[in-house]
Amino acid sequence: MPILSLCMIVKNEEANVERCLASVKSIADEMIVVDTGSTDRTVHLCEAAGAQVHSFEWNRSFADARNYSLDQATGDWILWMDADEVLEVSEPVEWKAQLAAETDHLLNIHLVNYIGEFPDPNETFHIAHARLFRNRIGFRFLYPIHETLNVEELFTDEHALKRIKQLHGWTINHYGYLHSYVTAKQKNERNLLMLQKELTAENSNPWTEYHLASEYYRIEKYEQAYHFVNLSIARFLKKGKLPPSLLYKLKYSCLIAVGSYEGIPNAIDKAIMMYPDYVDLYFFKGVALHLSKLHTLALALFDQCIQMGEDNINHLTLKGSGSFHAWYYKGICLEKLGNMELAAHAYEEALNLYPNYVHAKEALVRVTQLET
Image (tube, rainbow, N blue to C red; front, side):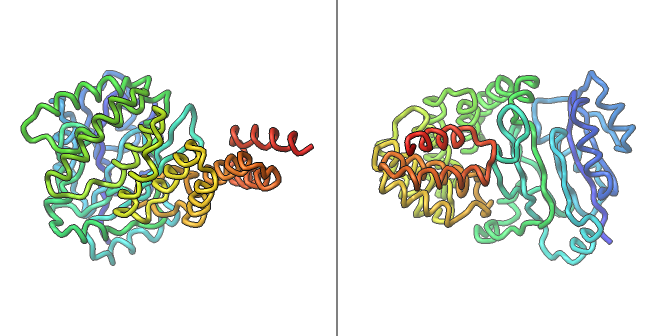
């Protein structure tokens, strides 16, 4: 049976690391933790949990630290995670047999990114993320920040990249984008400094501009975010590569955030042609049509979102874009068109899916009062 190694890098993660290691301990044959200079109880907690802890002198490269963790791993397969993540495995007894029969070298795992003030399953982004791979066949991490596996070096066929399978029954819950985590770690300031430096490097890649855009978006500097996401798209095109779908999601999020939505319905159609299975693009088009007071056209888009659903996590997908958010905006459009009965039904559908959806609650009260 295959041996599984967990590989992690940490620094001052005493608040999170026990929970992370506990979630993996029952399936990992070894837990490799590389510490980059903790001054709290992180190292002690990792050792107490049964992990092998190795020290790595921080050189401002997350990729180098992660690659050092790979060098320590003896397993056949490597699972890589962060301390602010928790693994869920629905059928832990059968996973080794599943991996033993696996012919691929790289597998995606369902990654759930929590946002907002506290963990709420309805305030999340979902994506299939490459987290599990065979050891000793050449996988390494690239880039000093927002490090990623060298998948394109090992899989030169673009079609093979699109066919990476998802390991069903495995989920990684990531809590690092909750407001409290971001504030405590001062992530935005650190990341912006590192990304700005990376931007000046000769071998910088188009992802650098995307990650800069994401950081600016998180701190509500939408114009800067829009500037950098456009630079990222242009650089991907210049390299002869199709810009990844999440760049267009971010681009149109920025435009809606600054109130520049008039041109979105036509412009976003080009992105939809490239990614016809990406529900978030249809959702943003519907929002832009609604904001442009084209409510009948918007209704058709929200109906399409509901029909598509949001189970396709090959793209970074906002929870609710194919369910409760679409129902809520459908209600808004129906309300604007004067159909209070159908609007109330739409809000009720949104609340059935997300009972604590504040905007839908307020809207339902409003239309119910208008009906009476």
